[in-house]
Image (cartoon, rainbow, N blue to C red; front, side):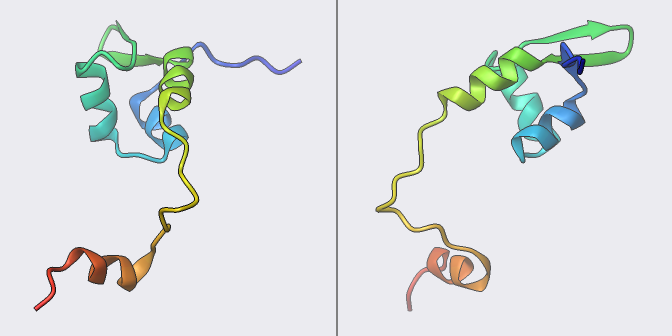
Length: 79
């Protein structure tokens, strides 16, 4: 029987969502994630991480996913 954790460290939550720890801090501050304090530790509620992920919009097929140099070129203004 595998037990699922109730809480994650901010680093683990960031890894789970593939975002930065700073973004996790911003989401906690914006009250989009639930966090608790235990001594000096911050514990991020797993269910709030799952709920936040479920609330994100689904990627539409019409908008391309761009990676690497091509992505950078698309962000630069045309001359």
